[in-house]
Amino acid sequence: MQTEIEFSRQDLRRLIVPLVIEQLLAITVGLLDSVMVSQVGEAAISAVSLVDTVNVLLVNAFAALATGERVQLARQYPEWDLQVRFPIRGRGTLLWYCTRHGLFYQYV
Image 1 (cartoon, rainbow, N blue to C red):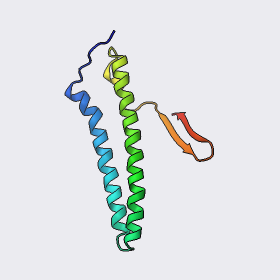
Image 2: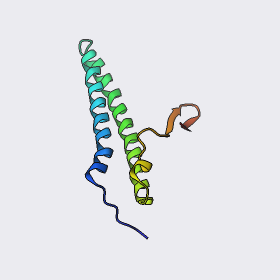
Image 3: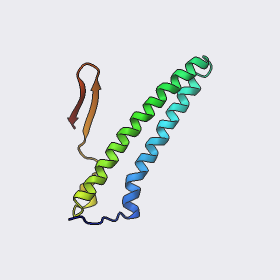
Image 4: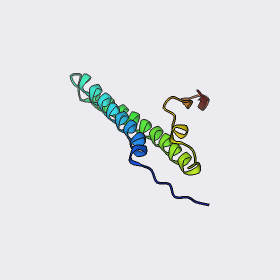
C-alpha cells in the first residue's frame, strides 16, 4: 500500500541546506586550487581543473547516494519521527576504495 508523503518546508530545508553548503565548499576549494597554480602555467591549471572535476563528480555521486537513501527511508517508514529518521549526530557508513581489493564499507 503506497502512502503519499508530504514534506514540510522545514523538512526540505534540513535536506537541502547541508547539500548547498557542501557544494559551495567544493567550488571554493576548486577555485583556490586554480588560483594557487595559476602562476605556474597553463598545463598546471589544466591538470588541477581536470582533477577537481573528478573530485566534484565523486562528491556529487556520494551526496546523491546519501540523499536518495534518506528519501527512501522517509517513504518506507512515514510513521517515524523526523529526529529518528534523520539524526543530527548518529551512526553512518564509511566507504573507501582500494585499487587492489575494491570497495569497502564500515559502519561507524
